[in-house]
Image (cartoon, rainbow, N blue to C red; front, side):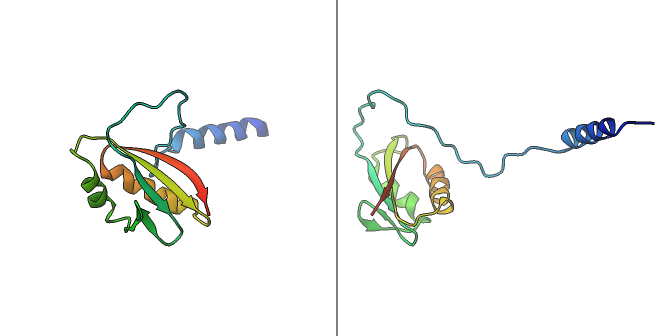
Length: 118
């Protein structure tokens, strides 16, 4: 006769070994490091994200048109552009994630999320 705990343990072991842990659509987020910021010759781009619109340096832009707009601001393709993102009230996590995924495809950018602003 097999005890119930042995059966539960075997089932647990089976499901742990047969399942896969995949990383689906991960977004890289890192905490801000302490200390002085590195000096940069490139002025930062200012993005204001609201639930309905997105503006780059005060000009309305679509998320799909973000790459050409940021490419126009940088001197060369290899230049890392600092991007400041200000969140308006009502922005949900999915909208911010969509923006971060779009910024990943833009090229070398250094993103800083400032928080909510009225």
